[in-house]
Each structure stands twice: as C-alpha cells, then as structure tokens.
Image 1 (cartoon, one colour):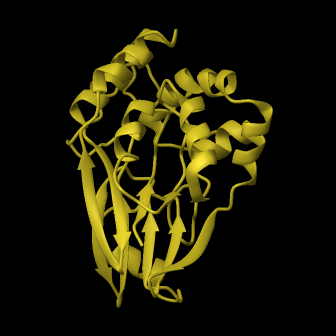
Image 2 (spheres, one colour):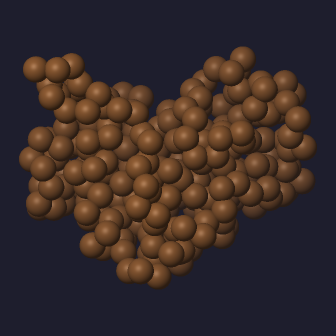
Length: 243
C-alpha cells in the first residue's frame, strides 16, 4: 500500500496540487493545513475530502480556537498578518472540524506500526525537534511503534533512534531547508521515500500579493517560498532586533 504523507500545507494550494499527484492509495496529513499561505480554504477542503487520517497542528488549533499558534517569535507576526484569510475562507463547520482533530494517531500499514503526530509524541503541537537522534530518543523510547512520523519543523529527514525510525516528510507549503520544492513522503511496505516536488511558486506568490495582507509580510513570505529560507527578521517586528 502506498501512503502519501503530507504536512505543513500552510494554505499553499499550488504546492498541495503538485504533491497530491504522486500515486498513492491513501493520504495522511500531519496538520498545519492553514497559516501563512493565501489559500487555506482550498487546502482544508481537499484534506477533508481525501485524507484518510488528519492530526491537528498548532496553526489549526490557533485558527479553530482563537489562541496563539506559539510559532517561533520571528514568524509570529507573519502568522498574524495572514490569519484573517483563514477566518474568511473557512466556514464555521470547517473551523469546528479543525478543533476536533486528534493530536496523534497510531495506524498499521503493511505490517509496520506508525505513530502520526504534528510535532513530537510528548508535545504534539509545539515542540521543535530537528534531525537530532539524541533529542528524539526520550520521545520514542517507550512507544510501541516501529516508526514515528512527525512534521512541524519544515525540515525533511529520516533517523534511526533506539531501534525505531523517526521520519519528517518536510513541508508541502513552506520548506525552510533551502530547497523551495514541496516536500512529502510515501510509505510503502515498511519503507519510506522522501520526495521533493516542483510546483508553481509564482502562482502562490501572486495569490499572496492579491490577499490584501501586510505588504512586508507578503514580501517576506514570498521570499521564503522562492528560496526555501527564512528572510532576516525585520527591525521592529516580533522576534526582530529593536530599531
């Protein structure tokens, strides 16, 4: 069975369209359907219609419950600048669905037992853990699974940790590892394929430009989409040095 794993869509419908073309039998989404991007409504509607499993991300909870997403300080003002799009594009029913999403789930495919979570098993929404086996070891030590599949960091990796594997498919909508192509993973027969898929970045940039959001936020988010790297913090913005 081919299981397409997507994470951190962040309202980037063009990127999602590119990765969902990868042949698959079912899809799993690790959360953060919304936030930062110009088309959160389209992303939510595709996931609701086509994903067999969806877990909640921090930006999903933020939109659904009206709480801060608790993202890194240098990104907080960018999230705030685009948040009105999520409120405008999603119906009350769609927001309620985001609020009801589970924060983790265990499934077995092809005899392999997977834990799916947005951030980490101990902190499903907020903790950032990159490709550091020592940091992941206490997170996975007592889990009765073969593989932990997590997103949140927007960094794609696969690790061997204490007899288990930790997989991050990377971000569909906002990669931050210097490669602007959309990232995803395919699980099949117990194996993992980490994929990068080119998409029409300028389509998303045009949608951002037409969103009516803060021009500085649009400029920084567009630069991030084009380069796969976060721009330098702006003076006077959250997480930036004071003027």
